[in-house]
Image (cartoon, rainbow, N blue to C red; front, side, top):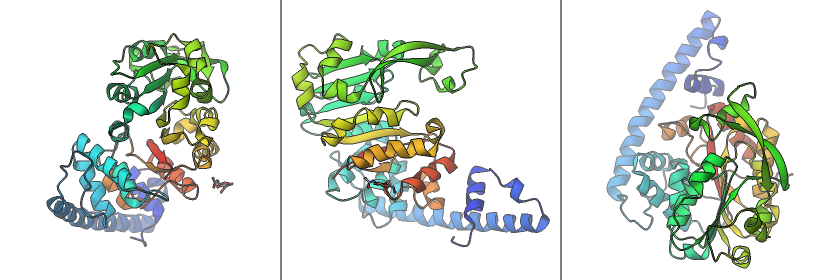
Length: 374
Ligand SMILES: *[C@@H]1O[C@H](CO)[C@@H](O)[C@H](O)[C@H]1NC(C)=O
C-alpha cells in the first residue's frame, strides 16, 4: 500500500481531483494501474478482514449487556468492521466496555476502534448509563428537539440536565421531553464565549430547524432575529442564571444542586460555533468537573482550520483527549479505515489534531469527537 500515492487513494475514494491529474495517456495508464492495484489490495483485505471478524465473533460473541468487548483487540480494523455490523445497542455496549477498560493515559486503539463504529446516538447510549447516573449532570448545547442526549439523560434519571437551544420551534419540542426523577432546565438561547444578545439566522422550513441552509444568507427563507446568549460557565457554575433565563421545568432543581454535581457529558453541536461554546465553558472544564465532551466536528462549518483547531485546543487544554465517532452518512466506515490508517485506530490528541482535521476535510464528511480525561 505504501507505494500507492496518497492523492490517488483519495481520488479513488472520493472521486475528486482525479481526472485533472489524468490528462496525459501515460499518467492515465499509471492511474488505471494504481486503481486496479488498489481494488485488488482492498478486495483481498475485505476477504481477509471479513474472515478475521467472523473468527472474532465466534471467539467472543457480542452479548453481555454490561458492555461486551469484541474479541481480542489485536486487530482493530477487524474489530471496527465487526462492531459496525452489530446492532446499535451492541455497538453502544462495546463502546461502554472499551471506555470502562480504559484506565489512564491517551485513548487506546481499542477505544478508537469502538468509537469509530458508533453514531452520536450510540455514544450517548454508552456514556449515559451505569449505576449512579442520578448523581451526574448533563449539559446539552444545541439540543435541538432533545434527541438524543437530553432525551437519554432525562429518561435514565440524570440528576439534572441543562439543555440549550435557540430555535423556538425546536425548543417547544425540547421542553416537552419526559423526565424520570431528575431536574430539567431547558434554556431558550444560544451558548457562546460571552453572554449577551446576538443576531442568529433561522430557516422557515420545518425540515431545516438545524439550519444547514443558513450558511447561505441570500436565501429568502432564511430569517434573522435576536437571541439570548449564555455561557456554559454562567449556566452551570453560576447556576442561578439558568433559573433567571427560564422558569425551570424541573421544580426542586436548586442552583446549589446544579453547581455541586459533576458532569457526565458536555455535548456541543452548534453548527461550527463549538469554539465559542467551549471558550464559554473554560472555568467548568478547568475545574475538571466534566467527564466526557462530545463535539460535532465539521470542517465545512468550522470554515477555517484555525477555528477547528481552536475548538480542539480548548478541549486539550483542559486535559481531555479524544477519539472520533463514525463519519456521518458513510455506510462503510470500516472500509475508510483501510485507506486512512488514522481512522478507527488513533486518538485525536494535541499532537495528531492537524492530521485528524486534514483527514476529515479530505473525506468531505463530518464527524463527532468523544473526549475524556483518564
Ligand atoms: C498543543 O500544541 C500546541 C502547538 O503545537 C501548543 O502550543 C500547545 O501548548 C499544546 N497544548 C497542550 C495542551 O499540550
